[in-house]
Image (cartoon, rainbow, N blue to C red; front, side, top):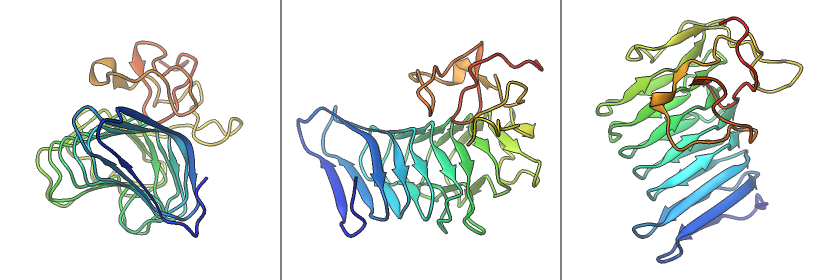
Length: 239
């Protein structure tokens, strides 16, 4: 647990191998993650970030199952990092929920409900290259992606909740699904009902090396992945 009065900065030093930061909670202070050498891996698994930012400067950093809210954002300065199974729970950061500046980063299977005014759920800077944006569920009415001129993004198999607005920033997605995701209000949060059109929308050929979802449940139930951070644990009754 990080005290808001403190500044926290974690650097993965040479020779440390694999570092796991689990169930992180940061209420106001910034977090910076760096990796200093080949073969070093940092994993942030679960937790809550209320602001301001999680800045990733290194490579091979995995952010898995982190919830962001308040003024928080995830900012990918480095290359070849992954953000998956995360939830943007109405973050109000003015730059966006996830900002990408580096090369070869992967943003997949997240539920993004950004409320930062004109800011998009995902902001691609012009320095970003070959960003993969796959299987995310965009809800809440905000612009999905703002692209400032990045190079060759791969945007595919995303889901946009059009119950509040028309999709924006997803023109390149040839497998885009539109509809009401039908969140399970009894379960709370962003779990999907068994009749959600977001179930089984993401081709299994697009996703590798992921076994659990935001809640720790099996990530693949059926023949394809569900869009967003929460995998329904039952088959889609409407398909």
